[in-house]
Image 1 (cartoon, helix red, strand yellow):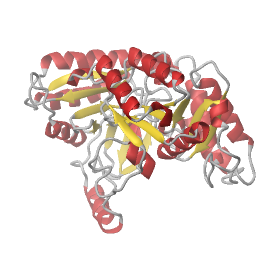
Image 2 (cartoon, one colour; image 1 turned 45 degrees about the horizontal axis):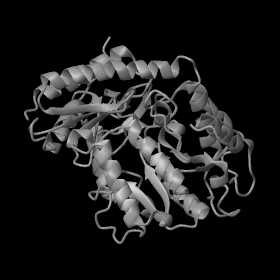
Image 3 (cartoon, helix red, strand yellow; image 1 turned 135 degrees about the vertical axis):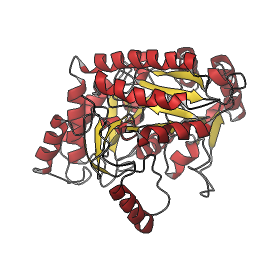
Length: 436
């Protein structure tokens, strides 16, 4: 039985009417990858306000890894809301905050004592990690990487590489941020060349002034490029020797997205600090900084915090997510999905010249679309065309990449084989219409 149900054209009349209201009432800034308004969702299926049922391959930008509205999360949220919705951990602490930090300390890679801090969003986790690193080292500078995305608040936006739309019109940005090349083998940047450029940059910036290096072990918005193990090993050694705090931004790649709790586990990488958000809350707004206890304790009491950070209801949802992921079948199923999807995407690459590269880690995978396989020129228009083709036929997809020419696959990890096969029929039909 098919999962996709199209009762109207996409977008349907009710979505069109709501979009008109949105244009009149909501600021221009927020974008929409899919022009439909959701009524409800469950598992890997979204039902819009016109009654159309779409298969979700975006998961709210990699948030609902455990699926839309799983019963365990809904129950945990409802139970907690009946007891305590808000207390502010800074005023009247509560056990859930402590329990979640204990869980995160146990999950994060690295055989050293850890502590955690909870906030509301990925950008807040990024901002606080830089504050913590500066407090620990007494140094000002930070190195980030090309193709990075770290968020939309000012330090996070400064660390982000992509200018449009994230930084356009918002200058000036924060100072003391340097940028190094990220290994991008498909576009000719090897791990060796990237590390050589990094060390050169660090020398010019004087390593003794560098508080932190922040890196996504798998680029998210930048195009789903995993950092090579050898690059991360050299980076880790360099930071250790020079007393630099090494931060892994796993906001998109964490909590099962790559088939393990963190991508770093598969890359033999144990950063000083690791950042969580998105999949951690299963749809509730929550984020975390977890890392070496002595670094996490650097800020003075009261130096980090916030009114809503580690909200009791969001904490309950996060604890339920961790419980779901602890099911012995959950992560192996995610890994199996990754292997299966990689085979499918690799087969497409052989058939369709518009696909220049297939890459990712586990079930966090992307296609890079190009105008010419030889020149590898980015082909953003084809990525937009493919996304439009898919949503008009009942499949939700998102683009990615510094040049907007990647299509990312972020399906909920509870998607069934039948739903995935049905969605991929639509995607492949769209690929057939693209010409390099």
